[in-house]
Length: 415
Image 1 (tube, one colour):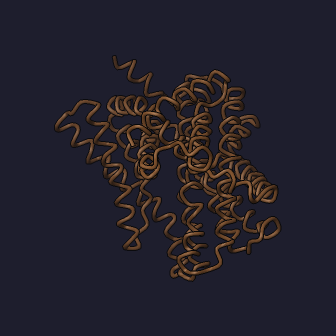
Image 2: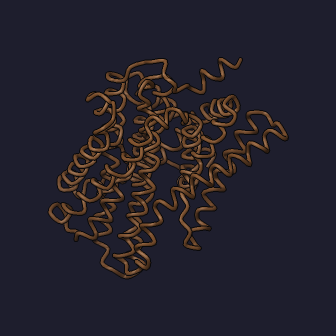
Image 3: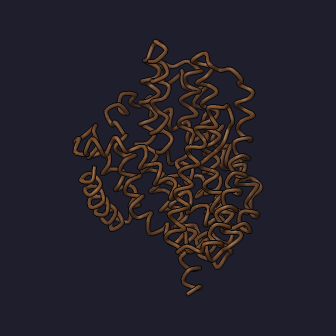
């Protein structure tokens, strides 16, 4: 596995540099590198490296969500809170519902099977969106109206809602739907539990740091370690039927420390920023390696048409959520394209219906179609969304001295 990591570090840095030279997002180069070197194209990646793919991607996702939490200024979040909340569920619900309704027209799926597909596809990718929003926050672009913070917060909640609704439809389809109402009620419960859990953990860590005063590097390692334990806690609680949004708790931990000890938070965020260079290569190349291009192409124009209809519904949902916001039309357009990218959830959840159908001895054809469209959504929307975020954001977001501060600036000032 060490050889595989070494290869990906060197090639990932090269791909990132090449795409930046072309004025394209570096993550796009790393995604394509993963696709090319993955098991479905050239098959160059070491098997051991691919076996550890899930854990490596989770560690990388933890790093970027921690950075997101350490960038969530309470003042800015207070200003954009209503719009962030509306954007966290209106666009995703509209996209998932539209695919559920139109699915049988485009593909050999029932409405229930299309609903499962819809809410897999409806999850926006924090792996793509969060680092790009942090980049805008650090450059103070859109800071005056808190646009990157709004999108960052909404994208993180969007995933929780999409995954819970998908699990409801999966339960209905497989006959294990016991407690549908409980699952729906579980959405706000998991969100609240995640936030409260993150605040409690943040308080505990803050007291630990103030008592023993470890160096910033050790603080960063401790924060990452306990954040990974939160993921394990979510699995344990799920076994008892207790909903808990671990990834949201990770962000809330960083937010709490930022609110109580800003200088300490910026120091940790700065360390995480350096670690993200390595983590981003692991995350994007391994997400790319999960993409089976031949499988994605099986659904052809029908799958592409359904994904496009879903994006139209999602875009309308973003505009609906921002009706009473102070954003200009150009800024609303940026918010729309920022909610296009799919990658992380689709790579992780796309095969779940197929596995469930196989285990129950059901016809697996619908599961194969769901997986194919899920993969196709990554192939289409990850590069399209990343490029659109870069181009539209660069054109419409103003640089200002708003209240969104970068970790780099704060650390520089403290020196």
